[in-house]
Each structure stands twice: as structure tokens, then as C-alpha cells.
Amino acid sequence: MNTILRKSMLSVAGLAFATGVAAGPVTAHAAPVHEAKPVAVVHTADKPDTGKLIPHGTQGAQSRIALNDEQTKNAKAIIAATKKNGLPERAAVISIATSLQESKLENLGHLGDRNDHDSLGLFQQRPSSGWGTPEQITDPEYSTTAFLKGLKQVDGWQDMPLTDAAQTVQVSAYPDAYAQWEQQAADLVAQHWNS
Image 1 (cartoon, rainbow, N blue to C red):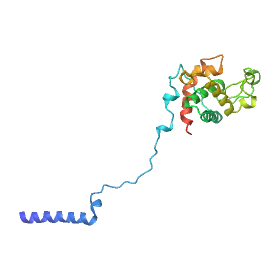
Image 2 (cartoon, rainbow, N blue to C red; image 1 turned 90 degrees about the vertical axis):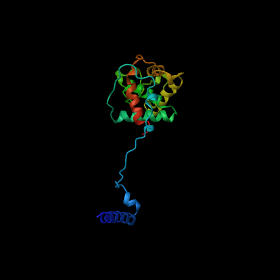
Image 3 (cartoon, rainbow, N blue to C red; image 1 turned 180 degrees about the horizontal axis):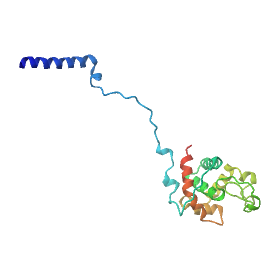
Image 4 (spheres, rainbow, N blue to C red; image 1 turned 135 degrees about the vertical axis):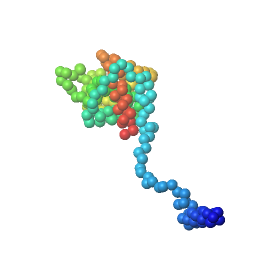
């Protein structure tokens, strides 16, 4: 009986070996194949570093407004002008926060009696103060470039709290008001810098 059992077991082993050899070594030991599906890859390098956008952290309570298409377009124009001028993301954050305070990212024309002197555009720049003509000031690229030119003249602007850098350029009656827009400005730059 032992001989019969041993021959049966050898026959089964031989059959298994022969089947494996006939089918090939890959098939005999292959794991099930699953169909590959495309995977979305998120590149964290595509978004600016938060440490560069808000190096000092936000100061005080933050405000936020919902933006319409025109306001978003203006934020993108500020970012594009910042990049065109060869300045980093932080300059765009300061610019957008300034515009959020001055005009809520609206390219304002003359407001009649409600106008603050002759202030116009995204940054409420004044022709009478040498910012440019009304046509220039109401051009988002021009007005951003004019703001950035002023910012570049501020020694150490890169290391200043946002409200100090913005106030040095704008000379506002409300110098601390710019700080409340820093988080929304940083969010806009993070979202649109590489778009």
C-alpha cells in the first residue's frame, strides 16, 4: 500500500510539474492581473509654498469676500503683472491684498461724489499724485506695475509685514486695514500662480 500511495503522489507531483512546464514558469506562478487605471498625480511643487506667501503669519482678524468672474480676472491680472515684472509670489500677495482693501478687486472708474479725490482703478491710484493718466490707472497691468514699482522702492519690503509694505506704497488714511486681506490674497496666489 505504501508503494501504491507513493506512486500516486509522485504521479500527481509529476502531473503538476508537467503542467507547470507546459504552461510556462510565468503563468504557473503569476499573480492575477488587474487592469491599470489612470491616476491623478498632484504635484505639490505646482503651488507656491505657504511660508513664502505669508512669511509672518496673518495679522489680526481676516476678512473674505466672494469673488465674481471680473474680480477673479483682476486677481489673475495682478498675478500676471507680478510675474512679468520678475517679482516673487509674496509681491502678488501684497498687491492683491492692497487691491482687496482699496477696491475689492474691482477696476473702479470715477465714482462721482463718492470718489476719494480722483482715485481710480484696482489700487485707487490718483492721477493728481502722479500714478498715471485715468486710462493708465484703470488698466490692470499698468496699475499693478505702478504699484510694484513703488513696492520695489521700499527697502526690505520682502521682510515686512504685509500691511507695512502696502502702507508704505499707498500712504492710506487706514494703514492697518490691508492686513485683514492677507489670507484671501495668499489663497488667490496659491490657486492662480501657475494657472
